[in-house]
Amino acid sequence: MNGVLFLLPVLVVFGPLFPVAGPIYGFRALALVCVLVAIARLGRWVWSPLQRLWLMLGVSWILVGYVWLLAGSPVSGGEMLGVSLGLALGVSAAAFGSGRRGVGALAGGWLVASLLVCAISMWELSSGWHASNYLPSYHGALRVAAMKEGLPAATFGNPNALGAFLVLATSWTGVFWTDERRHVRWLALSALGVTPFLLVAADARLCLVLWAVVVLTWIRVAKRTAGRRLFIALVLGALCIGGAYQMLFVQQIGIGGDLSAVTRVNLSAAALWAAWQSGGIGVGPGAFEYYLAANPSPFATHGQVNVHNIWFEVLAQYGLVVFALLLLWVGRAFHFALSGVENLKLLPPMIALVGAAFVDSSILDAPVLWVHLFTILVVAANLWSTERAARPAPTRSQGKPRVDQV
Image (cartoon, rainbow, N blue to C red; front, side, top):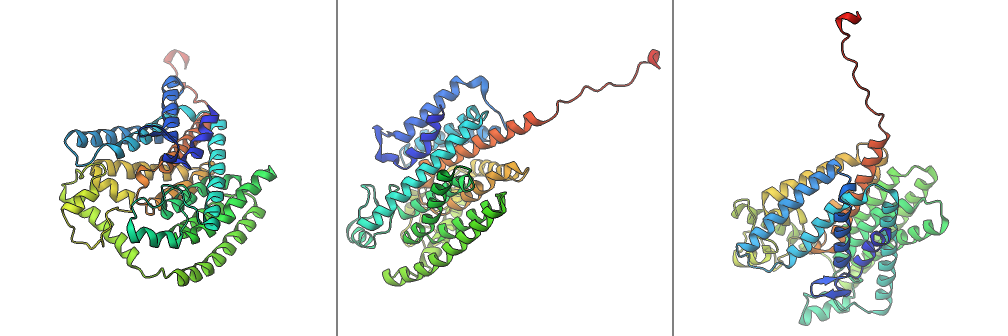
């Protein structure tokens, strides 16, 4: 089973480019295997508080989504298929939290996936090649202009999606930066060194800042002083070189201005407006763009219809209840990450999760989001079960002595 866990992050790299049958591709098939294995292991599930809250979130989210579909949502169930499978995968994490080997397999999968994406992106930059799913929503002159810019996207179809993956992967590969195995350590540091240049090349400015925050958080979590000095040198050097390169890159291809930032803020405001207009029940799974087209918001979105903000996207589409449960789960996860020295390993992935949710317009349906959440849940279950096993067994209270014993 550890091999299956190892392959989960790796198959994220290929996504729909690895078809199996209909809407089921490689990652989804493997996720189904995880769910079925978890059902077979039902008696060995680790029910941490974070896992119980996830179960509540998952049931509520799926119920709301399919009620909308049955009520005649304006879109098909494509998004709900991905969301439902991702939520079920998260529930199945309870079956894999009792051993460290599963955690190690997942971390190793993230490292291999990160190296694969870095290699594909470097080839993309050097050769001008792009995957068949590159910028699928771009057509005509817009697509020609985008192809000339040549921003890398690896296999994710969009430079922002590439940036989100690199940030999320960095939050897991940090565990290998001080690994005792030299070859593993240098592989992880190689991915770390290449990542900021790829983020600059993809014009993923927000991701570059988020990547630096994640790396600095790992520095704080790291135990070795020598390792910290190495990390600080790498981060500062990469930021200085990357910042200078980005200035030249922006000048060369003419990217600039803050219209993109204003549009994203207005899209978030439009999502809040849609949630308010719906009375807090949402407009249906995947239906925000249709709602915005039929009901123009008071905020100028310049033709953009994707929220680029998973939190407000969930609020606008699935309503206040699911949104509140999602925020409650995120808050509980942060509380758990800060509740002990060992648990701090979950802090970089949680920071990456919150930040990446503002980057990619389609991350709610992206495999990388659900594997990231699955990994958080598996690691949290492992840490919680280890902590519980280390607690001393409670002693029975002797109570008050009887009168005849005094």
